[in-house]
Image 1 (cartoon, rainbow, N blue to C red):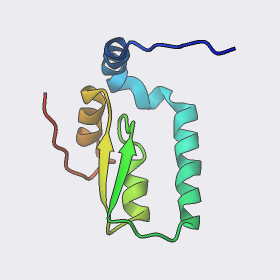
Image 2 (image 1 turned 180 degrees about the vertical axis):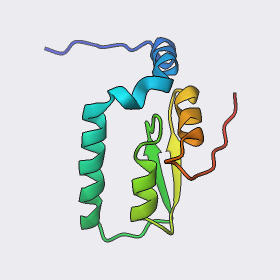
Image 3 (image 1 turned 90 degrees about the horizontal axis):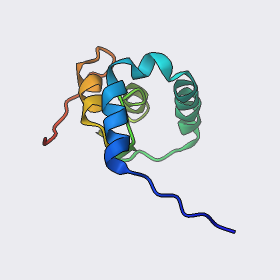
Image 4 (image 1 turned 180 degrees about the horizontal axis):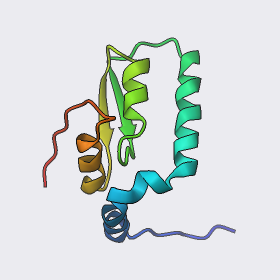
Amino acid sequence: MSAEVTVDKHQLRRSFERAAATYDARAVLQNEICERMLERLDYIKLEPEWVLDAGSGTGNAVPGLLKRFPRARVVALDLALASLRCAVTSNSCPWRAAWRD
């Protein structure tokens, strides 16, 4: 038996937009999973030209991705523009961003 689940993307975006400024302080589980996944990248011997961090949020994985893949262009993508703006203004993310409102 399958149940269809629908997600209101506009409401989801608004929720993440409102939470962006305080998100990192509350995302304990997400941060732990991020650290563990970054550690597992040591097993991957590829040296990509590009890395896409889809669902990047406030960019907590970006510094680790830049460190692991120093020659790659890392692209952070997220539904919530406010989250990406937090990432760009954060001291922990030394990277450039481009977006369109």
